[in-house]
Length: 579
Image 1 (cartoon, rainbow, N blue to C red):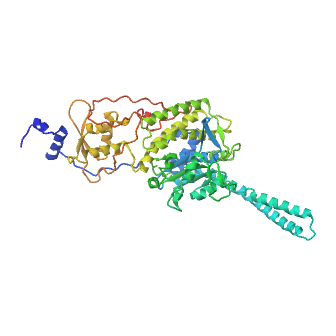
Image 2 (image 1 turned 30 degrees about the vertical axis):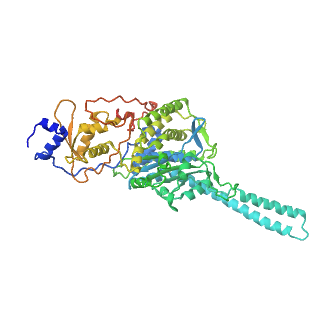
């Protein structure tokens, strides 16, 4: 049967249908296919090392070079170590009703053999030294405490013997009572306990007791994820309270019904710093543990997915002793400072420049949130501004000799903003994995769109214009050229084949999908993170000539002093176009 184009269009066929018909009937038109090349594991942009103070940046780089660990792991572990050393004794207060602690809870996702253990061992060395020093001092105090107890017990026996005599005077009875009062006071005195910062393999129940003995503060540091695996060791219901309350400092009552109301088992302000290095599977598993996302544990974590570091062959690389000694002295100085306590923290003053920088970031957040910057991780986003304050306070405590008398500088606030903007992209990856969405990369998303277009189409053919129709509501895809670039990447991975369509106007392509089994299993139809300027996907058709509304300009973080210029972070945000 013969028919012309007019007859085909009258029958309801489209140009796309005709293209598919030609591809499906003419011999030799379809491409020869090979197995697709899988995408790499998800990783985020490298930590903006230039955003750290000079000495800290040099130390972090040296540890990374020595151990083969990613810079991100060393940087976040170092920042968490500074916060742990403060033991909850400082807060940042941008206004009277807001008091933000400066410790952080971080999670570094690194595959086995990625240098986790040696890096953690080096960075936490000063915390271990402090713990050992405190244990030695407490051992001496405990010995004296025990000797005093034995002396009082012996004195009580002697006084009791005198008071029991038939002709004992009233003074003997009063002497006995006085000694017994001394024994009661001695028993009520706090038994000397070694101050301790770091724990790792501990259950939530034991952690509460640990925090009570340590006057409220503690830190969970480990190159593995056993701390999280312990949350439901003794029951089906995970216990997340030490992490949740330890982030914000909300009080915890250890007493139960029937307990003496005056037994003192209350932690007015628990502070828990966390830095764990885990393998990718651990995070995926934790996303399925009850309460990890629902209660907001994941919203408190600063999670990083660094790129793997190639294996090095240089045995001579090590951390210079000068840097190692600098790090030990600074952390020990922070841990030994006085003037504030965990239960009565000191307020770190902010300079006018720091206030101005933070106010700008504070105003930026709701605009970015409305534009979808924190899509699928809204709770994490709501803590974003507080995390900026924490990082700024951490850097201030490291640099200042007397942090309570020195103001947080505008430079340190700007550094904190750059670091936290960098953390946004990594958090997107983390929440995508926890939600079972994969990496949410733009390439995977576009591949998922192609799948959706062709799932019910036996021709396995679509066009770049049709793909653009589906993704044009996203800021990253506001120009057709962006979509073409991603399609070319997919072609390089052999998921699709592109054939240039002739005609005037911008480049347009026919897209052939790889029919081999499992060709598109690497993608799920999940939108990549919303970016500033994204709008909801719209129905109807659109051509490559359609113009996009201009996205609103979002203010970048404040500039840092020219003496220490910062490089772009790679953070998904307004700078992506500039990069």
